[in-house]
Amino acid sequence: MTVQILSRTVILRYERKGSCQLPLEYRRSIIATMHKLTAIVGALVLDSADRMQQVPIFSPIINLTGMGVDDMDLVDVYSCFPSAVQIAARELGLPIGDAERPLTVTGGLTFAGGPWNNYVSHSIATMAEKLTATPDQMGLITANGGFLTKHSFGVYSATPPRHEFRWEDVQPAVDAEPTCIGEVDWSGVGIVESWTTPFTRDGAAEKAFLAVRTPAGTRALAVITDAAEAVASTREEIAGARVTVHADGTANLC
Image 1 (cartoon, rainbow, N blue to C red):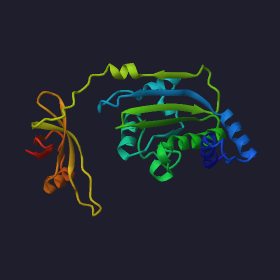
Image 2 (cartoon, rainbow, N blue to C red):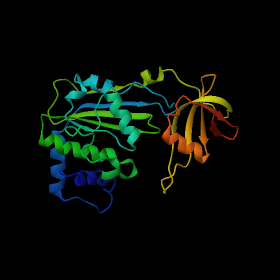
Image 3 (tube, rainbow, N blue to C red):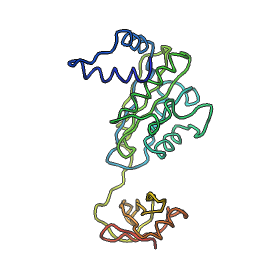
Image 4 (spheres, helix red, strand yellow):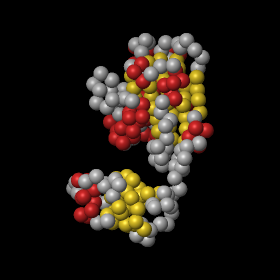
């Protein structure tokens, strides 16, 4: 089985009424391979889409299996953006840049592809190939959505587990976490919590998008449009700096 073939099975399910059919030997090889693949943990899911906050949700997936992150031989971390990989790796305790255990089995979303949110189908397919070739190994796959606020995880192996299939929805734990009120219209002096500086195609700092904590402890979003301050945001640590947010949503460092 190949990633391409397994990807076609997904298409096939939507094209049974049409004329598209895979050769019988391909379909048999897919079924045989997937029968060998056992999901130790089917899913750990949560959604904090309305709250851009830090939520301690990564570790339960490992706890469900009775193993630790060091027991994972193969890993594929959802890689929509570098920051998503960095955050997931930090929360899971996975080292970045480990040549012995890279954080992808496909080469990553931006290199391997995954049209229309289909990347995890490819990572599961590739993981299936690798695990059926080495049945004693374990594989961890992560996925996310929204503003890094929707998460799912799975631990896979081609060797049947000693315990039953395990699944957990940790949404109640997420909902119990403290929240931060988001301001829609706010102006005043606050503190920069975090920022992102996009660049033009010529490599120049264009602006800086800010998350600002207000004196009341709420959160506001703003944007620095001054070119010099945008450049400064790439050379200096501005988290914790005072910033003036204007009524139109623009901001300037104090």
